[in-house]
Image 1 (tube, each protein chain N blue to C red):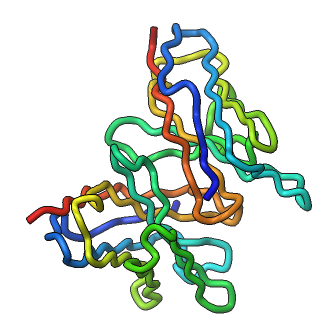
Image 2 (cartoon, helix red, strand yellow):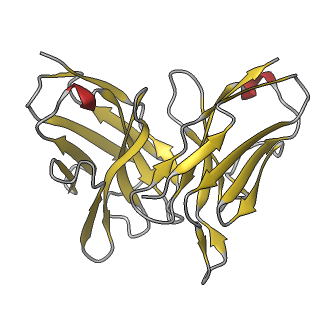
Length: 121
Length: 113
């Protein structure tokens, strides 16, 4: 059974960098059939896919254009986890952030518990 | 980006009755080479992450009750709950995974009448 355990601060100041980590159990971040995604949810923007990292003989990343200049998703093979960094945050980035596994069919079958991140001074 | 539009925004159905939720994509999500529709449905209950119900537009995820059914092709899709149970009260989302950025509908809130 795959489990995703999220960690990170719930409060970030404007202009700073939001950093979250997702620890994977029951699968590998280096899996050749999975992708590791970050999705956020807010009342104003709904469910919004932010980006992903995945391994297919080499590492790939895809990012949403809306955050492309500010986002980094990195795998950490030594700890079997992946991370999200979102720089220059504003109150518009306030949301519940989820880490999510994309399976071999590219659908989102396992979700972390979600972390509410509030951007406020 | 592919825009996903659901209707209605909210729906109240009596226990045991049929519930139907519609989803329309701004462009086709049918891959002609595989003949598969890259469309999924999720259920979200308060305080929980979304749960995958249906993928390839009509394939139920393991463990999902068979009262949940998906249909449609191209740009028009439907989620049907054949006989509404109390535990089905939730918000339902469609999502396309045909191309990045993957996008979701705005959600349909399903309640008991």
